[in-house]
Length: 282
Length: 169
Image (cartoon, rainbow over all chains, first blue to last red; front, side):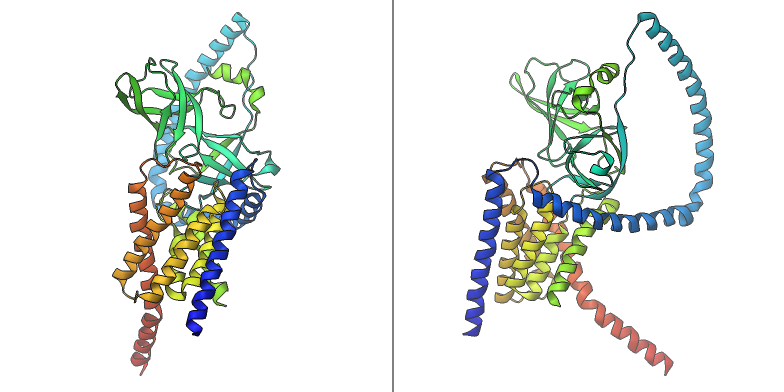
């Protein structure tokens, strides 16, 4: 009898917990404006835990790399010296080219281009569940980061900030199922929207059937979304499938290797002030 | 005391999922450590503990992700409760039945989680079958390994202590 009562109690409790969560879901789905407060508070609190754990793990890694991994340093040093010598030659060539370009700019009376304001941030944690492709940065609103700021890396577009707490920010990666960015094919100037697939690939959608797209084409940001600055690399077209005349499925391999990301750059310049710098990249 | 241990296990699982996973396989690991803890708790402590662990772990994961808070919690609550009921009805004490339970729990979780998102038209899941299958196997391997470690560790330590005592004599 006691067992029966326990089961009955468990059933009621299960019903109550499920009902509570259904109500929680329905309130967000119906009145979802911006980021829920609960999400911001929990994220801010847990980001501190992640920061501490990340510090510990980074300390172990630094110790390993600094002391145990010294065996490779000598060979690496020689290699770096060779690379430095080659780069110094290249630098001189580039400097000469830069001087010449500046001279030509002055000659053509081109206006002075401003550059995008960015800040570097370190990734301190990955997503809490494999179903969402997010990472946590070690900088937040205290460092000027806000929601919907673009996050990039030297290899290309990384994603956008979705939640920013005081000392940390959550970035939705471009490969997340809910992520998208305005895109343009560098060669043919065909436009479309790149959307995440939840895997390591992206899909190019909303492309005109008369657009010229081929495997290997470079896909760049078009700036149409108002988040990502124009002219940054998204990736390369990996496969193009056609259904009759229209494009069926266009797969894009991201320029960024999301599995190797450790540091990123956050674009602090608001979309309205990017015009001149975007033109310079074009 | 037991509740504190469960909370600690969930916190450790989330910390491992978000921090260490990034260094081991660079963040794309197809293992849900939160779900592994929920199934473990449900198998060892029954439906109520499994359900509450599922609610806590799921809500925490939802809050740390960019999705709707409650969907992961609801999916894990259902999984925790059902797994606890299965553990009460059947003997799930050997690696193979446990493996099957972990696989089934992952499939139920994926069905509830993806189903709710699709039902509410919040996300698209184009052919998630391969990802779900690999996650089911990954979760099952980690879960069974966790059981073996937790159950085998005290015995191994005891044997080692006895061996040392024999050598001293």
